[in-house]
Length: 573
Image (cartoon, helix red, strand yellow):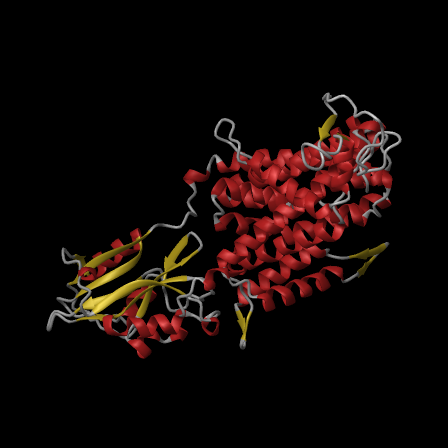
């Protein structure tokens, strides 16, 4: 779209009049010179704010990254120690688009760009949370039912209040979708103008209220009881006459500890510990695990030794090695058989910012950093076998990425017949579900289904930023329409009722009934709102603690399905 120009001049024409316009500035105009200074220089051309917005409207890719850059800059500003983080992109996009609408220009990012952002975000989030999701699912189904109940209560309350305010059912359904910050619910209503105005009126409060609940939850994060204990090492002198094996002791302590090396009393030799290693009186063994478990092992086997056998690296050495050999991804530490191959073992595994004990049943992913103990003269062989390439951290595994997202889109587009219409998960929920499954599997035969934690985190953040820019431009223009229509006060009140029931109901029930820690609770709030912006806000406040993504994915799929169904029911009332 060409920028507007003074009358009688063609855009880009050097000079349409005998004398240039005066060099003045107004709040909505800029003067830009074209060409070289001096002889032959063109006259300055007036560029209005409207012209700038028209140019941005014609360049959607430029607009996306401009909004990301501006929003991220705002997100780093701290007020009273609090910053918005990635979610500032959403608010920056809303504000800039509202300003452009006031100038008669609507900034729009094409829907496929927004879809790309949200499906990449959802799939990568599923990959990250997959390994822990299905384990947590067995103990969290009651919490999902509680969130579902709160959504139903919010829908019923919205219908009752909406009818009392004289709001039509279609607009109530759209307001419910906005209050739940759930675009698929809006689509389920048919996306009419009436529903869209309700959606826009309630959306912003839905985001702000959820952010407030997340901030409230994170105030209690320091007292979380589900925080992983720090991993420590301790040399233990063996006093017991029971002659236990390493496997026996590890099993008794719930596979929470590991043994890296042992010095035998009879010949002072040091070797890597295997499952069948027998501990004899007088031996000194190095124990790795959470502090409380390591202390318990020391009391069970003998006492803490003053001899630090890790300092003697003449026979055994240790180093951090990045798992970048794709053939090994998806296998457990025990399946690598390092003890038999090289006389080595894995004491610890670091994935992202989380460090865990290297137990035999721990499943490895590309990019994991392994603390390997091996004979000094065989460390080079172990390193070559595992890969140890920095590419292991950044390999996006394009086969898994492409096929996984494609499957997610197919799953999300399946139309399921229900009374009065049909139902589908939508692209985001479909991609998340497939991501969870692929992240949990890790490998199907020779096919690696996971992504390195670092690569998945980068993809999730990039997808989130793109989606927030898209959502902000869409919401910005709709909010202006809602204000102009004059209905915004009633719709905002209706949306606030429904948002408050869900957001703060989830906070109170999950915290005080299910006793969930603040960090994971912040993710549950984001999942209940099915909004990536809330997850991004919680991640930025916690340094991407994996418990946030786990809480989010626990309730997101169920909440997505229930919201779509409730929106369709509200339309038919």
